[in-house]
Image (tube, rainbow, N blue to C red):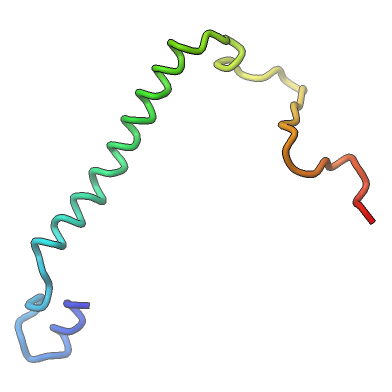
Length: 80
């Protein structure tokens, strides 16, 4: 909004922008995804150490579909 306002008024371009605040927002937009990725990676490694079920970390068998139990079944008729 500050840039659009400076285009419409006779003032210098970018005069109505709080550049310190814009820099803080920009840095948070850069740092936040990196921080989340690192936390997710650490959580995965911790769970791999604590949960000793190798079936969780292997790919499923080919041609075998497992249902999670959530949502409607595609093979059952529609109600009503």
